[in-house]
Image (cartoon, rainbow, N blue to C red; front, side, top):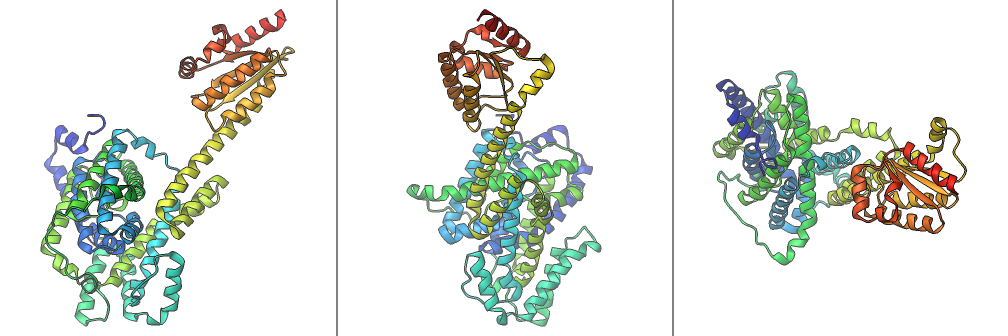
Length: 546
């Protein structure tokens, strides 16, 4: 259990923690807290929940992820990737459904960690990640057009194309003041870093734009007009759970868990590259799971590791989980003592911040780069992207993962077949001409369900024309139950055709499987040989006898 769950905070405190590092972590934590403030509010509002839920998520989940996580510098909280999921769950299942889905996702993440799946999630294909990330970015941008233009549309369609149709048919209702504030927010957010990188442009934009609106009493909607006051307290609440309905929340919970796991580990990998450290992936998943089980009880929404905030932490000197804890405390103090002013933030200002977030999430350079690559990668990218935008993120991830697995298996099967067909020239070059009646076939790659039928069909055809068939298995890393079943059938059929079957170069782990499944009993032990030279010698003996 120690190797599965070993928080970095414990390691840091055990090794010794200096005052010098504390001062760096303190400064970094305060800066990240300021960076997180506008994002936490904006993500909550865009997700369809009240703004304090974003703050609560950043506080509670941020504290848990830093205290229990497997990364020294990970900053946890609400992220843009969850906006689409949270909004969809709210529309379908309501607030109780969102709480249940998030808590179930937390349990799934804990199980991922306990089952040591941390390293497995790293192998999610890059085109799949870019596809749904770019799709989410486009959906976020789309949801912000209403507030960016100051449109007063009571009921906005949930679907992508009808939503844009509604925007175009209501353009005459656009509020010039809202458009000006949105544009100003975008410009300040992007270009303020030329003045200083210590204070985020989004934070400056919120202060300036809010002050401007209040001073000139500009006619634009604000958080207060849409959501009312922002509570100063954090209250415990529990959803009403009906066991018979839990199955309805499994799909959204799995989506939250997969997306949260992928994003948190991706963030941890990026931060490792910045600091030269090594995160503990399974510990990180368990911490993310605990955070998502507990946070909804305090009124929060799904949380994960946030790449941008984690990078900000590292750039400002944060090197231990203390910085993440300070970030959570900073947000708590802001919520308790300054929260009443946050209700004055204009909705168009939040829209501007989220438009910048959407652009940064879009990964358009990676998107274009993948479009220049292989057909398989392009297919995964486009299917995931369009399903995310036009259908649902849950389906996009499910279909993307299944499609990636199928295409991977096809690639493996094709690669093995290609190598197998090239074996004759290799043998002739090294051993000269083959004796009459001898056939050689090499299986290169996993002998599994995707390739087993094709391999065995060729083995039958080749073997039935020969007196002796050598099956080279030096490049077979594993064999599954389908491969074993088909290989058994091939050996039996070839024996009936009076063909001697010899196996060469069988790896120890594959040989163990052959013994357990009694394939060895179909062959004489002397016909399973460690090298091709010995197999060729044995084959010549059989041919000479005949």
